[in-house]
Image (cartoon, rainbow over all chains, first blue to last red; front, side):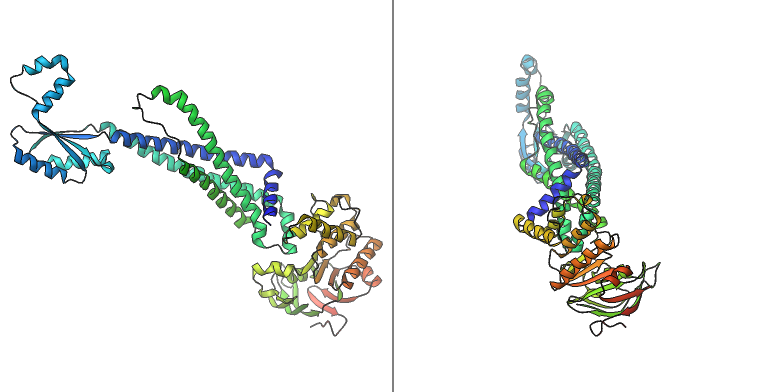
Amino acid sequence: MRGYFFRQAWQNLTQNPWLNAITLGTITLSFLILGVFLILFLNTKGLLEDWGGRIRVTAYLGDSLSQDPLNRLREKILGFEEVQEIKYRSKEEALKLLEEKMPERKELLRGLPRNPLPASLEIRLRGEYQNSEGVRSLVRKMRGISEIEDIQYGSDWLERFSAFMSLLKVLGLGLGGLLLLATIVVISNTIRLSIFARREEIEVMRSVGATGPFIRAPFYIEGLLQGFLGAVLAVAVLFALFQIFLTRVYEPLKDLLGNFPAQFLSLEQMAAVALGGLVLGLFGTQVSVGRFLRL
Amino acid sequence: MIEMVRVSKAYEDNPNALFDITLRVEKGQFIYLRGSNGAGKTTLFKLLYAEERPTAGEIWVNGFEVARLKPRKIPFLRRTLGLVFQDLKLLPRRTAVENIAFALEVLGTERDEVVKKAAAQALRWVGLERRGNCFPSQLSAGEQQRLAIARAVVNDPVLLLADEPTGNLSITAAGEIIRLFEKINLRGTTVVLATHNEGLVAAWPKEKIVLEQGKLLEASAPPLLSGG
C-alpha cells in the first residue's frame, strides 16, 4: 500500500517537472531568505550578548564617604535586582590605575597637590539585564542616592544596536510571514494542478471504491516532499553561502567584531527548518485537497 | 439486491428527474433499464452507487441503506458494485492491462504478480488477451467497451450497473457486448443495463424497467420486480 502511495506521489512530481521545479525553487528561495534573516538575527543577538557581557555601570562617590556609609551603600546597590557584582575602587586605586594606563604622565600625576580622582563602585549587571533597558533601569534607581555624585555608562551604542535588532526582528517576521504565505499558495497551486491532472484516475478510484484517505494520501506525500526538499535545499544553499561569507567578508572584519565567532544554524535549528518545510507542505496540500478534492 | 421505495430526485433545473419510483431487483437477474434520453436512467444509477442522494424515499443496495449512507461508507458500497460508465472513463495514458491493474491496486492489491495475473485473466475473459499492451486510443469502440467491462468485473462485483454500454456500437458489436454481460450474469452477478436502444432489447429480450420523464412506466417479470 505504501509503495503505491509513494509511486503515485513520484508520478505526480515527475509528470510536470517544470511546474514542480518552479515550486521547489520558490520554496527554497523562501526558506533561503528566511534562513539569511535567522542567521543574521542569531549572530547579531550573539554579538550583542557578547558585548553586553562587558557592560559596566560606574558610580562615582563623594570624597567624604567613610567606611560605614560605604558598606551600607554597597549593600543597598547589591539589593537591586539588576546587580550581579560590585567592585569598590578607592581614590588611590583609581590613581594607580591611571598611572598604569598613562605611564608617560606618571610624574605629572604624582606631582599633583591632591588626588583629583574620585572613589567609585564598578557595577556588573546580571545576564538578563545586560541590555540598554537593564542599564537604564539601574541608573534610574541610582540617581536618587545622595552618596553618588555621578554615574557613567556607555550605552548609546547599545541602544542603537538594540534598535537594529528590533528592526531586524520585525523585518524578519514580516517578510517571513509573507514568504511562508506565498509558499503555502505555491504548494497549494501545484497540488491543485496535480489533482486536475489526475482527475480521471480519481474518478476511477472513486468508482471502484477507493477510500478518501487512500485517494488523498499521494497528494499529501507530494506536498510534504516538496516542502521538505525545498527546506533542505535552502539549508544546503545557505551553508554554501555562509562559507563564502566567512572567507570573503567575515575574516577581514574579524578583529573589528572582537573575534566574535560567526555561527551557522545549529543542528536543532536546521531540523526546525526542515520541519517547517513539512508543515508548509501539509498546509499547502490541505488547502487544495480541501477545496478541490471533495470525495 | 436493489430495493427502491417511493424514491424521488429533484434538481434545481429538473424538479422531476425521478419521481416516486418503487422497484425491486433480485439477486441473479439480468434487467434492462430502458428509456429515452433524459428519462432518468443515469440519475437512477447515480442514486444506486451513492453519487447522488435522493430527495425522498429509501434505497437499499446489496444490504447498504444508500440514502442514509455516511460518506466514509460509500467506498464499501462501491466495492460490491461494478460500474460501466457511458463515457467509459478509461485512463488514456495507461495500457489496457494497466487500466485493469489500476482498479485492483487502488483497492489495496499490492503484489505485482497477483495484480498482473488477475488483470490478464480479466482481459482474457473479455477476449482482449492480445490487446493488453494497447492504449485505449488504439482499441476499437467495441474493444474499449469490453475493456471497461473487464475493469468493472475484475473485483468480482455482486451487482453490475452498465450505463448505455452499447450506445456507439454496431448491432453486431452490441450483440457481442450483450453476450459478454450474459456470461457475467451466468457467473452469478446481477446485471442492470441501461439502454435506449429498442433494437437491442428486441433482439436480446430480458426483463425490463422502463422510465419515462423520471417516472416508472413499466416493470416486467413479477414477482421479482414490482412497479409502484
